[in-house]
Image (cartoon, rainbow, N blue to C red; front, side, top):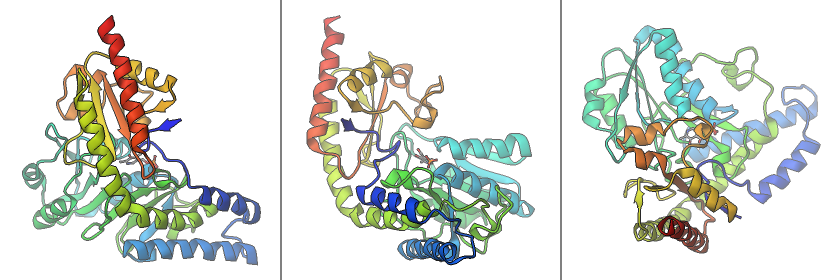
Length: 376
Ligand SMILES: Cc1ncc(COP(=O)(O)O)c(C=O)c1O
């Protein structure tokens, strides 16, 4: 199998799987139980939180374990918006956010009467900082932007966004860092809240993390328990939370080397794709090298994807959480792409262990698919 869908999810590290099995067997108790096993497990969770906080240069109380990146995004956006409404009613985000951000924002607008500005992007998926600056108001309480787009890899200039936002408002800044962690350098300077997800960095599904400065007011979305400082109730996903520290440690350690390696793979993949008839690359040149979105202008995504998957080459056509919706990509639409591009989109997303050989096989198979188009 050639797995090139790492923006969707990643294969857990063997080491983590072994620890997980052992954990399930030996540490099945509730981490809030007061007997020694429960107390020890609770201490292990707190140790994990502390290790991550040191790696992120934040305080342990700033980190809230969640079930996913989507939950972290929902908690940050709705929790901060509701708890800070006394300061204003205006929110800002971009047109190419992950659905868990966009739909949280739209829900706040449509059902709770918040005002929302959605900043458009250019055909590289890039934000216009001038229009962000003009959109900021005295009553803007929250802005949310992604660090790296999951469909095309556009990198938003978070440092500049922070500067623009702070120059013109008192708004809180949330950043969806799900596709950044372990792939690009992490810097939380000036950011009030950020979301992460374990399964994107060779950890386990069912574990996410919200960084949210502990002095901020945030409304719990799941209430009814003392867990996670009272901000996120529910019996802890103990083993996963404990193992998140190791997951993050491995990801951060391998990040610089992996970025260098994937940058070279990206250059190879792009140069080969450019040689193939009827293929256009959608990802911006200066985007994250981990994600290459391209379109076949004469074939629909399913045809190319089916041909590839018959050879056990796994790619996707867009964000997996929208893969079963019969709609075109909101990201490529916002980038003003035409119908051929929208219908023929393929996303290749690499990881630290992707090899050149795998990409060579991918390219050979795409050429094979193309031969059939020409012969028809
Ligand atoms: C940018 C981005 N944000 C949020 C998420 C949601 O993460 P999760 O799958 O953990 O809910 C994803 C997942 O694809 C993502 O790519």
